[in-house]
Length: 226
Image (cartoon, rainbow, N blue to C red; front, side, top):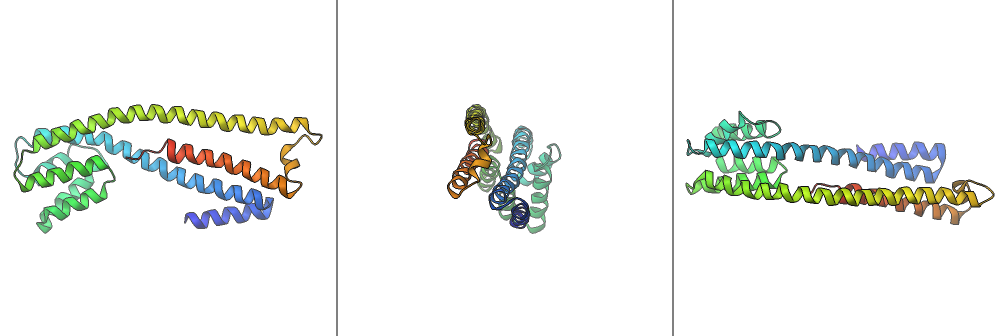
């Protein structure tokens, strides 16, 4: 779908405005699509992390009154929010229907794209086989998770500073580029660059540099790698 959308946008803009605007429109369309997916992923990760705090607190309390991991997970799923509630409950149903707890919990780990959740479920599944204390396992995972949250806040501050610097650089670049038009008789630096091949190459490289900066800001600096 992304390829089709990009091809359609690029073709339409190329027919209307030319090759260079078409290429720029295609790249911008790719950015918009990837940005939308990135935003959805980050929202999902944030929701999962919030529910993780709920889950570990509830499981730690429930584990004191039950030795069955599946029972603890089932009861915990009733008190937590989405997106984990339904996924955990589905794993519980699968474990009881198939009597294969390992595969059900493995499928649960694969279905939730959060490394701390995967670690929690994996450690609990191992503990269930060796009759270990679930509360201790949850406590250890909780400490690691809280340390991660603290470190992530510090990283977010660094990411924000980096994004501000990149945006400032892009704005200054745009202002400088258009200011150059004031020193030419034509007055429009873009129109001047479009007059010959070298000018088009300069314009294309400038646009590419700005788009590369935006790409780095969005998909490298601001990206949540959880």
